[in-house]
Image (tube, rainbow, N blue to C red; front, side, top):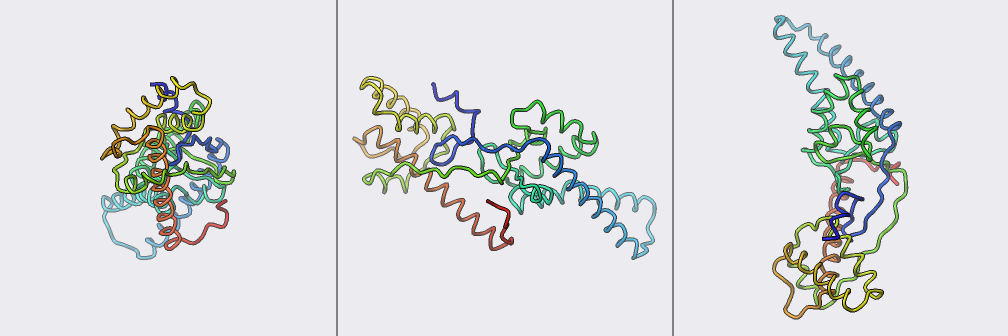
Length: 270
């Protein structure tokens, strides 16, 4: 299908708009990593100093074990937890206006942050950052290996992004769409549907009918139950996109409200 050429391109919003997200440049990413390393060094010295005040009488083996646990906590548990709680921001990223997001533009989960942290031990700390820099230089979205493995990348939050309108919901299909099980559409398919709906008036009748039928056939495999019998193809496609956008907006609003209750407002967020 022609829509597949879009699959690996831009982030696709719930309204099926391909958004050219502001991928963070390599220089600020290196800067944020250096800031985070300074934070880790400060945490290391402060933690070891506090532990030293207790004058623990432990064997050499126990001491090595405690040191190893502290290293794991600082290099894996701490960055993974911070990025998960802040939805993709470490202290260095907050300072420089960066954020880690999923490939589809959504917020990262624990799986993403833990994976990035584990792989980061090797590519950032063991290799002194050389592996991470080389990977970012060759990847079109400046991804390091951890990003490639878990499906994330880093964006700049200080570049304004356009406000995008959702396609209107056909009134007669609103009750059906609200209760339908609409699976996530492949990005390429979602973009193809939106472009078709936007350009349908310029198509010949035969092309309009043929393309619409192809898109409906692909979309029906991801929707249950099907729309009411006799639903026009274009109304069905518009309803799916509009409902998908409504659900994404509701989910994001809910996550934002929860984050604002738990975390202070980020005054630098655009």
